[in-house]
Image: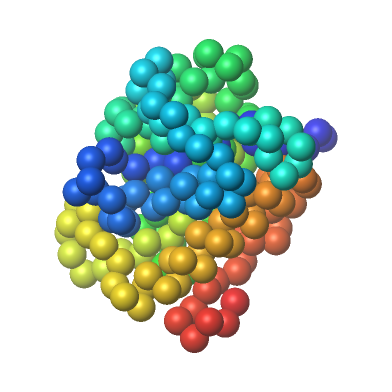
Length: 200
């Protein structure tokens, strides 16, 4: 079986400053961290209704990052436009997004799967016509509030410290997937959890 190596990495979130730093925008934060580490810059791309960032990744291949600016529940429009333009297959698109079913400090990568009730993923699956594309879910926990208030809220100060470590680990996980494939990254990172006491 050939390795699954991402070529387009999509971070999900909502545009507008009021959503910056919210739990639902952790996908944006992740690709921003990746772009920063790889010294990529962002460009507005109207064709994709999103921000695109590209360059030569650590594995010496061209890898692109995408932040759809369509709002979460229409993310699939942007992703579809990008893969059609670049002629990518869905298997080479890796989507990063928030997951309430995982605790803060935990992340999980998969090669395929359902939308899990996530509106952004629901839109992407509908537009791509398949569930067979890799994804990296970053835990935001459930909290005590209604779902909508929870996902649009911000992390606590203690959680911020965990999330900064999670985002650094996300970059490591993505880089592993570039060099050794998504399955290898899954085996190394799916069982890790970052706690408040800094233990991994």
